[in-house]
Length: 293
Length: 321
Image (tube, rainbow over the protein chains, first blue to last red):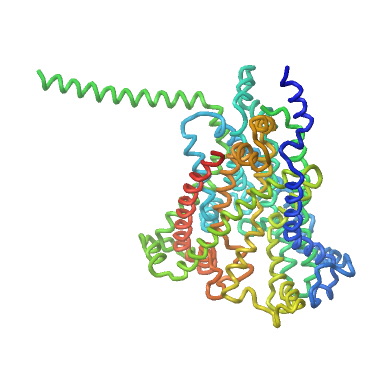
């Protein structure tokens, strides 16, 4: 009885638990100072994209644009019309490669992470340490053997040459396994008693409970796939992604400095947009995850 | 009589041994059958993993014992690549030294920065927090954001840094930041630290959100007084899986630094002041097409990372104790 009002008091003041005003101010100041340092190059990307050519080569260099113009973007769109294959084709390729590589990886890696985190079976620790160790081997030298294997499997010069290896990246499995490990066993045990299959438990109980993890993984994988030019495995121009076409444009030298600034902006803006969509959902789960455990 | 008994005993013991093995096999096959669901779930990932990662890594390790120029078939040369690497290759020694400096400085600092900023951001609420996350993660999200540093560090009067320092009369003439030996490594370390809020940082942010909120209430009742105590006694122990993950990612990043060095200082850089193990590897792998030697470098780097990982995991095991 005596404890009751005390608990209620805590509930109401939950957000202020163990927080001091001085601490908040200190942290806020740190964040502002560091934030300026972190954001500065981003500010440059945006401003450069809006600068007319004469301002790009101005001395002393100004960070902020004075006469903003969309000239760079119109230049870029003109250049886009001159490409070997229609620009929409590059766009479609990117949607297939980035989308396929990301969605497939999140599913396949999560599916494998669940038994590694929550089941007991022979061979478990060997499989897991293989994945962790694999991340420490430089991909530069494995690329050549990988190329041999991809040719041998007959998937060279297809989307699969980029998508299938991406499904087996080590980082995603490791990340998902670490988050699933934190789930209390009781969560799965009660579902098992109700007769749910392991597949059902994985899809309906485990995955919703580790939503912040797979949304974060989606961000990583999107970035990875978006940055891939595919130049090693894709020969046909019709299969190449947007990233490849955009980088060809920037390779055009001084005359294209304006279009190049627009390209830099687009290459950064797309993953940032995706990041914001995912991250706002991560934040949302936080406010509703009171039912964990 | 005695000898016979002894022989019997031996028979008996070998029989039981055979039986034991048989029993073990039966048990194993029973377990495999019982764990059918587990193995089916693992199958898609690990089949692909075997083809696209395990096989290539094993092939690379084999290649490190060969001479292979990517045109002719590899020829076996034994330990020759490794002997050359450690006894004759002076540049490898420079790059190894640079990589170790890099890893020792940026590794722990980056890791702590990731944790610190993830934790501070977690203190903020709502939209402000989403914006802060974006700002701090932004350098990592646009693949080659470090190219912006080229603008900052350009050696002529047009570089942002030179421009600023000239305007403030700190310098009389522009400095060639990336062509001067003594500036290269420190500048690269600064850029790397700026880039450090990446994979680990985001996974910490996600990890902080999965910490059970009731733990904080319980801790407050147990006498945890401020946010710093809360961090050490509640948050960090609850986040151990993410801390482990972040550490492995940090190791793979700190030891594999190459892109920023090549793009900002060039490869080879002035007097190899910006050379790292991976730039050296790239030099042999993609410029000189000596894949055998490049594979040997990769294998040595791998061993270095595995050793560091063992050490770091041991240290992290003590968090919150």
